[in-house]
Length: 285
Ligand code: ATP
Image (tube, rainbow, N blue to C red; front, side, top):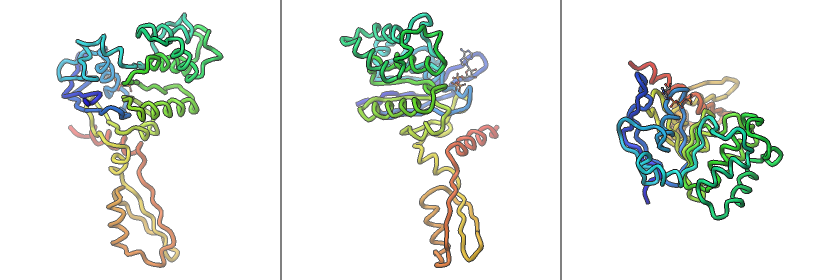
């Protein structure tokens, strides 16, 4: 089976800004693939390219085996896209918005699907109010419901949990994990490092380029760990790489003296590793 997303050397320029500067990646079906990066890194441009809304200048792109520009219509049926700014009909209610998006897909059991996603996003109390009267987080929920209503095999989500409260954010991610476990593919941008930890792999972007693409565990191993060893009333500290091999080496080198009472590890967080990656790249000419 082909990968859900295949991107090769993708470039896109807006005037003097190189929004995408040679992006290559492949996302197998069933993976949750995360995009991390500062404002302006190119995450939205990449996601908009995948859904056919931004036209790349060069490079190749296949989404579910289709060309997002030339086969846009066929692709839209199989993709759930949640834009960064919810694009909803402000005078319609949440339910009417979801029903409208669902109608574009000619669903056999449309009302049941609408009811199912409305229940999931927990908007029963407000489902008849016009969207313009809802809070930002509630609009995000409606937007997600619209993206999910036709049960697409691929979800392209641009910061789906921005403004969503923690309990619902957890519910969103539980749902994403469930969809991926059932074979669905999720391509998601986020600024939340804890969300990145829930991805199968994460690409860290800066200035239209991918600086690193790895599993969360692989990214964590790029950091440093401070090891504090308390022995006989003294505490010594040493910094090692955050890999199991480096820890084994450290312990072998020291030979674990019976007097050692405590060994504490303080590993770099994903946030620090990502910031260091981005800063290091920024320091290069
Ligand atoms: P954020 O985290 O703020 O959402 P992002 O990583 O999604 O940022 P993009 O929105 O893809 O970043 O923007 C990448 C670069 O392209 C930025 O410098 C942005 O100003 C520029 N850009 C994006 N869209 C346009 C446009 N329509 N016209 C001109 N410049 C654009």
